Length: 171
View (cartoon, rainbow, N blue to C red):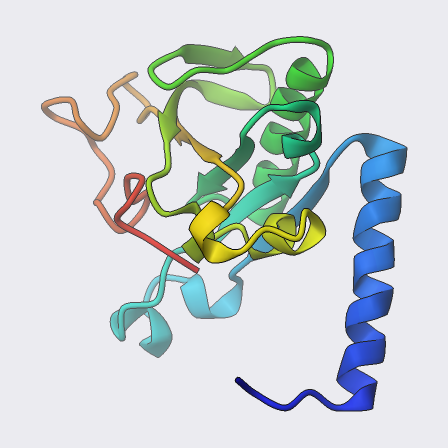
């Protein structure tokens, strides 16, 4: 266990309130992890850092897994996650193996189950008071390359570190 200062506890309380307010107001809160250190050529990336990714908090409250996307900019992650989450909030239920088209992503998206959500969805788990052993479920939105091929298809154009598959990355 680690010691937490009063200032850190106060910050966490404010962050928890902010996340809850965003979920009340918009249905989901999006966390984006990454940035300069996930850029190609960064020493951290060479040391095995995960690529940039974004994920939702809020869908578990309506009985649906949270959503994640890797290897895209903060803007793209926000647009795609907001669009797909809006469909879920309107009644869609995504299942692993489904293929989606999203206006915010010019490529097809495949929905895949993430086997290690406790290593990724920290904000969602904190919001729902879920311990690691009972993490919120998480679905990864895996996007096709420019020719419509997914990472498991022959000839896929992107490198594995550009968009790792579920279970091959963590926060």
